Image (cartoon, rainbow, N blue to C red; front, side):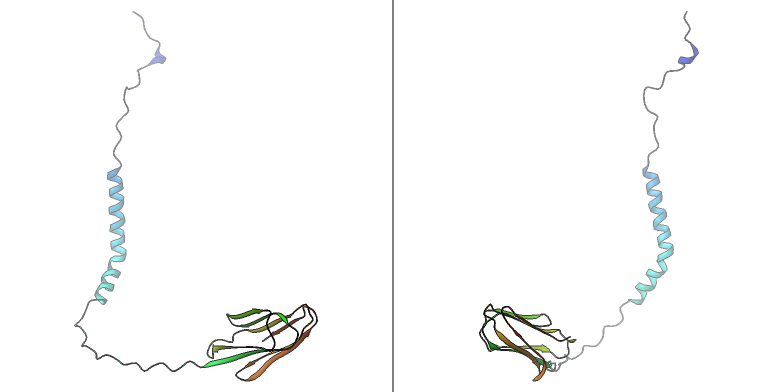
Length: 164
């Protein structure tokens, strides 16, 4: 009879040991979170719902006739460019309204209306003289009052007038 040395011991099992299922633990965690949330926020939800309980319906109201809104006051900005020669470009800007024209004939005038209650819009006039050395004079008025004016001359001379 042969004896096995003691280090060999008992053979390992042929299958894995059964594990306990995880779903009861997950279910327990969900129930615990719902219970804590209900205890903490339940009274607030009940108070909010009771504040929104509908009462008796309000009596019908006759339709309201709203007066037409008053017309919005406008500011009129007029850009003018005069002189000799042929400007290459003229750009007139009031706020987000931009007028940009190339190879214009002088005299050149553009009118832009803006709401008077808007915050002060930026006003800019830029004239680039042509290669022939135009002499240009530009200005802009707001509601008939001259605000800024300037001159430029020479080939590709630049006239820039801003409200700042």
